[in-house]
Image 1 (cartoon, helix red, strand yellow):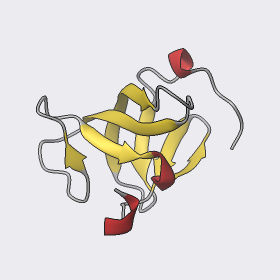
Image 2 (cartoon, one colour):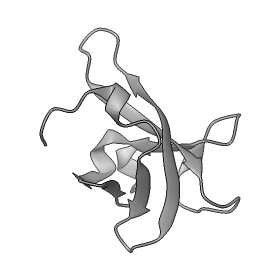
Image 3 (cartoon, helix red, strand yellow):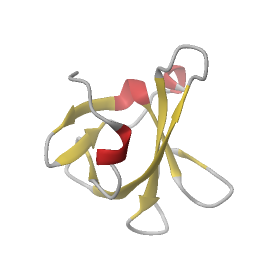
Image 4 (cartoon, helix red, strand yellow):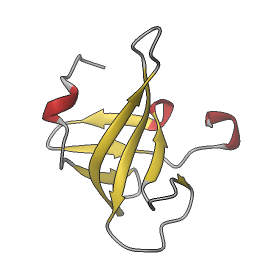
Length: 84
């Protein structure tokens, strides 16, 4: 995947690989030692979106391993238990 500045991701639409609208990017989390992307936090489009853990504030936690592509929107697959 190409390098992207985190600040340019804010409010980018997030779609599931099945085409479901999941929401928009709210923030990202990084490993403080390596700088590697850990999670993309997504403001959900609707209250009930299955397959992702959520924060106490209701944001979806999308593991970096689940990112499939980035263009005008971020495409992610639902995580398997080993992706967490």
